[in-house]
Image (cartoon, rainbow, N blue to C red; front, top):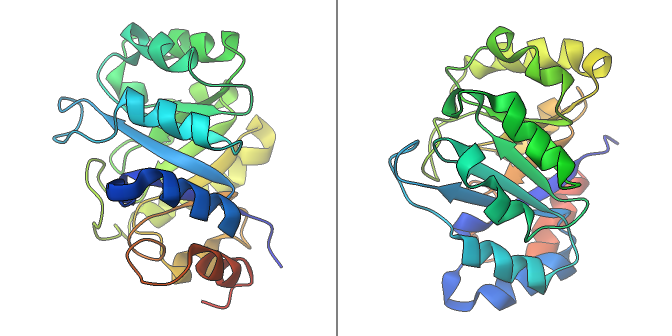
Length: 221
């Protein structure tokens, strides 16, 4: 059986009782909590806030994966690094920054795991040098900014390219967007390390999170 990680996309959670959501996901066996931060400029939406992230960080011992969909993250990344702990990850988008390697170094200096997020329109080749710096690559299988979007089939080529070079360059690949059971069954055995779960398979299904997560891990879905 393939060994892979499952991450909960917390922008899809029920904010009427966020504490309960975190607890039930934690007890259900989620590996980490995915936090989408949007500034309304880099993407045309606002999502989770710094305070949302701080609360979730205080409510669980599991790692946080913080996805910064913001312009010039170098200007604000310290707001996030000082609230996180070793084992947490921060992803930036290379094209959102003039000097992305400088921002990644700030993340490394804070003792956190550096990552880049690649949009559907961002080529592997344009980010190749950064891939030697980061430990995680978050591949966007939809255009960023909103939950519930359709999978873009041409992204398969990008996964193939990254799977070929990940061991040489020393990074792991993570899937974000329109992640259904079919994608996990296909790509986990190929070497994709983790999957961000949102409305496609985890949230809003009327089933206990633990039951859903168990079925996903056993590839029974």
